[in-house]
Length: 534
Image 1 (cartoon, rainbow, N blue to C red):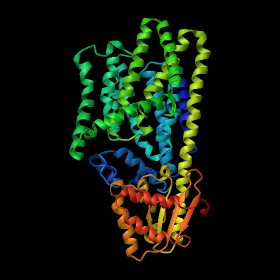
Image 2: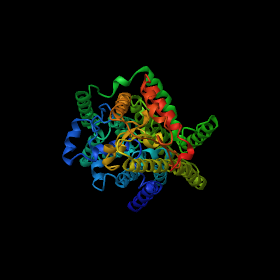
Image 3: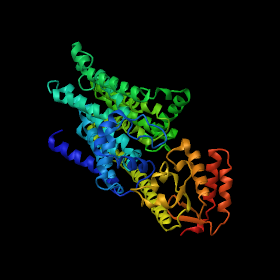
C-alpha cells in the first residue's frame, strides 16, 4: 500500500465515518449528558491532575463510580470553551474520535492482520458503518467507549509495527505511552496486555518472531505493560477497595453476561439484536464455508495464515473485547465498540481471500463487499435518525419546562414526564444552568418519575421530602407536563383545569414504597389528555 493509496483510503474511511453523523452535530443533550456536562464543564483546568487519583464523576449519581478517567473529563472541559450549553463541540469530538478509529482499523487490518489494501479498506468501512456504533458517536456520553478504543488501537498498532522493526524503539515507547492514556481513559484497557501477548503467540505476520528467539526478545517487551497494569490495579484498589469490580462476579451476573454475549454477537454480525434467525445464521455459515474453501484452495501456508488471522481477530479479540461486560451489570451497544474491530477485520479477511482463490471472482467479491457496506449503512441511517428524534424531543422538553417555570407563579409544582429515552438520569441537572435560566430552580419545584432521576437509590426519599417541603410552604399551582416520544408535542394539565391534582398529592405521599410512588406519578402523567397540548 503506497503513500498515495493510504491517504486516499484514509480520506474515504474518514468521510464514511463523518458523513452519516454530520447531521447530529447540533443534536441536543440526552440522558446522562446533562449530568456529565453540568459537572465537568464547570471544573477548572487545574482540576486535571486530581482525576488521576479520584473518580471523574464525584458522587452526582448518588454513589461514587470506580472510574478514573482524566482524559475523557478534559474533553468536556475543552468543549465547554465553545459554550457549555451548546452540544456542537461535544458532537464534533465524538465524530473525530470515530473517524480516527476508522483509520486505525484500516492500519490494523493492513499491518497486524496482513490483509490486502482493498480488504483493509472494506474492514475499516464496515467498522465505521456498523449501526450499533451510533450510541458511541451520536450520543455525547458514548464517547467513554470510542475514546479509549482510539488509544487502545493506537498502542496495539504501534506495538505491532515495532515488532516488525525492533530497531525503531520510538514505536515501542509510543505504544507504552498510548497504553497509559488508554488506562486512564477507561478501565477496559487492561485487556491490552493479553492482546499483545496473544498476538505474538499467534504469529500472524511473522511466525518466527512469536514465541521463538531469546528470552529478552520474548519476555522483556511485556514488562512495562504488566507493570503498568498491576500499578493501575493497585491504584484502583487503594481508591475503591476493588481491583476490577470483582464483587460483581456473582452467579446472577455471570448468567446475565452469557445472555448479553449472545445478544452482542447478533448485534455485531447483523447490526441489530432483532436479527439472527436460524436462516440468517445459516447464510452466515454458508459464507464462512465459502471463505474456508477459498483459503484451502490457495495452499497450506496461506490457509494456515488465514486461520491464525481468523482465530485471533475472531474468538480471541472478541473475548478480550466483551470480557469487561461481565462486571458492567447492564446492556449497552457501546460496550462492544472495541470488540467490533475484530469482526470488521474478519469481514475484511473474507474479501481478501475470495478474489485470490479465483481471479474471476474479483467482480463478485467487490459486489458482495458493496452489499455488506450498504446493508450496514442503511441500518446506520435509521439508528442515527433515532438519536436525532431523542435529542429533538429532549430539547423541546427542556425549552418547554424552562418557559413554563419562568412564566408560572412562584412556588408552582411541576410534575414533568419526558420520554425515558430522552431524559433518563437527567433530573435534576435539566433544571440548572447551563441548560436553563438559573431562576428556574428558585421559582418552581420540579418532580419527575424514578427513571428520569440521577440518583435512584434515594429518589424516593428526595421526592417525598420535596413534596412535603412544597406543601409546608403553602403549596401553589400544580402543572403536569408530558411529551410525545416521537414528535415532542407537549401535553399540559393544571389545577385550574383539574382540581383533583392537589388532593392526589396526599395520596402519593401515603404510598409505602418507591415503586408505588413512581407508579402513582406515572399514572398521573398518563391522565394528561392527548388534546391538552399547548
